[in-house]
Length: 325
Image (cartoon, rainbow, N blue to C red):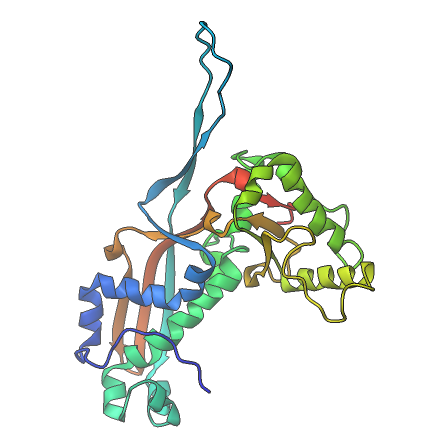
């Protein structure tokens, strides 16, 4: 069965798609969000101003036996992380020949385009809305969300935006809002012999340094390769109890922490425990900032997409990781 995607109804759009898109910033935001659906599923989506603060309030227990002396204590602390949106540009070209070939093939049955003239008049709905942005959102998720390091000289999601690994490194050494005790670094490269112990050690650190975090729904994010090393090590450690091919859904003795194999951590040894709500994909609160510019060129369409976004975490003390960036 072919995959289907939830897309805005484009059957009634006027044929002057370029004018429609440019004059309706809300539609632009809908298109961007559609293409970046995987980001919305895996992160908490928030809307921010240019420079905003991600904040949390921590309360302290100051109760004591009553007496006549007034002994004021600090009862709360406001934790602020300054977040700055980054500008992201996409430039690409849709050849008219490609639109025609799809319009004349069986694919038109799944796009709502019924004839060649309609495809040529409305190529945005056919090519861009359903395919191109969806692919770009996937690239951003896989390459930029964790491993991104902004570099104006390069092309690709990994160069367009700073990812979470860069933010985590700064959170330990520069911002100092992730406690050093929350970083449990293995002494050697992770393999089948030591990954099981490392995963359990990272969970044990929560019990030792912030046990109340276990009251939250936690995700243990790691690459698929690292997860496979954990499962193989677990089977080797408990051959009489773990079946061949059995995959753990949670670290042993920590049923409240769920394993999540994260595509953004592919080829990385990073391991990370935090609530999903603590990992943020932010977009500009001013939806009019997002722009899609389409120019009908001689041989096809020139398209530019501009939007402002960021990846970040909200509260450093709610993060435990292994310092592998």
